[in-house]
Amino acid sequence: MLELAILGFLRDRPLHGYDLRRRVAALMGHVRPVADGTLYPAIKRMAGAGWLTRKDEPGTAAAPRRTLYLTPEGRAELEHRLREPDELDISDENRWFTLLAFLRHLDEPKEQAAVLRRRLAFLEEPTSFFYDGDRPMRAEEFSDPFRQGLLTIAHATSQAELSWLHTTITTLETP
Image (cartoon, rainbow, N blue to C red; front, top):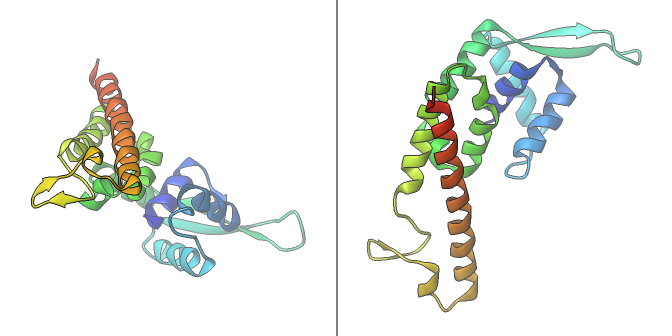
């Protein structure tokens, strides 16, 4: 998820490490705080893989600033991750939102629609946080207002996403 966010933001434009950290934190920091001890080793690993380069540029103060640039190999890696996301990228809401933030970087609407169709198929499977045997339970089956709330909110969120997915897939697939 962190690597995808780094690749995606650098695809948008070259960034200084601090700017990249701020953008990554805004996108996914509510899920998992982005510490320097996580971000900078990932940047180093990705530079070693040839996905990004670092260049020192004059700073506004005395110290030079290091700017990160996406390489053609990094762009290819980003497109691969967007085109063929892991199952967890489709099913985990936080990973899905990170993927969705950069899906526009796939040039073909057909490819974008294919990824959205995978999410749609996942959401259309009956599911719940609670089960009676193998049967998913609904909010109305609980007297506990907190479980009712959890299921009601989750259902409303899923319905909104399903509606958006149907509309967007239709738009992408209409010539």
